[in-house]
Image 1: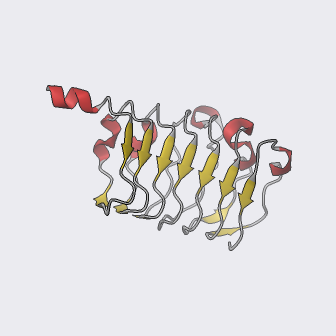
Image 2: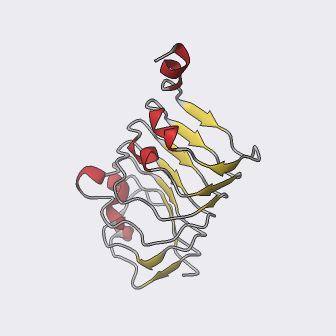
Length: 168
């Protein structure tokens, strides 16, 4: 491995929002082992999200809103330190993963969750009130194609400030 390759994995922040970027997010994002913040919001990123993105153990802030991202949210996310997940205003489809708050997929630090303005369908999993281990403050699922009952448990969350589920 040369010097350039070994140093690239040490990058902790990529803040390239609103830079008119286009194309797909490369699978090589997985080599950014120390990445804490990835902000590619308000660009023209398209295609599906690479699986390696969801194995970055130090990732805390993932801003991908206002792009043209397609596909579904991977079930096997292992982002224990993720604080903010913003996938709003994309072209994502599929159902919402039911096991984010169970077992190895626990996202204990999740505080801000934006999945609004996509085409997610199905029901809101009953495990969602436990997301973030009582840290969840903002929870936006509005403007999708979700159906069914809203799971109970949101009212007992001390830090919860905003829940948006309209237009489903």
